[in-house]
Image (tube, rainbow, N blue to C red; front, side, top):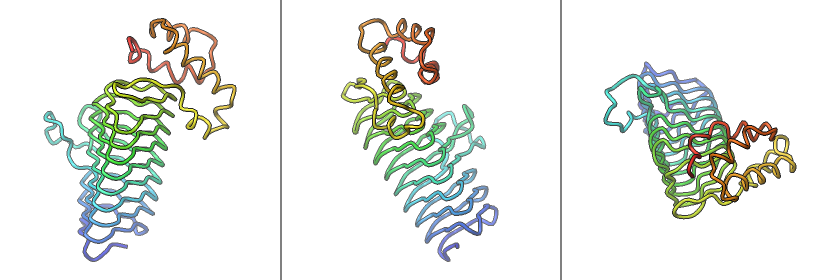
Length: 254
């Protein structure tokens, strides 16, 4: 259904099973899949792809050009996955030539007034709370949670299953499965709530392995570089190695 007041380009691809509400604008080159629901006053720019059953609430702006002074009009995209919820007045920019794409994976919740800048990647099942601002090239891992009004500086990474407290300045990478709290930002233990949501992957024994690894990395007083190298060289739990192997450079000197 397309509301009579909506402006939908004849060159946009809109599924017959999508809903485009009053005063929405869908520009040429946009792709709207089956089951997508655009409530009202949603603006979908060119080269924006929205996958099945995603709900977008009032006033959201999807796929506007990146706010990057180096951007010169190159054809880049915004991809939004399945079953996402994008609440009121969120703004999601397309990528730049650096990666070509800003990508929101499946089952992501972006609460009201969230800004997602160019070249960001938001992993499956992540939750970004009201008023958060993500700078360019920020990567948020799957099932991570960022508390309300937090600001994440450009090129920072928030690891999978991690938690960032509300109203914080995130100017450093947050490791996987860790809680980040305080100002300045500090690591405050393992995010047990997220791990225990997935008992089929994170048994109590595996969670204890995570807790031991956390203490080894951040609580012994040994330089993180040495502790991390020892962890990766040991016969540690394979998931621990999977989680931390990609973080070697970013954790040095933390």
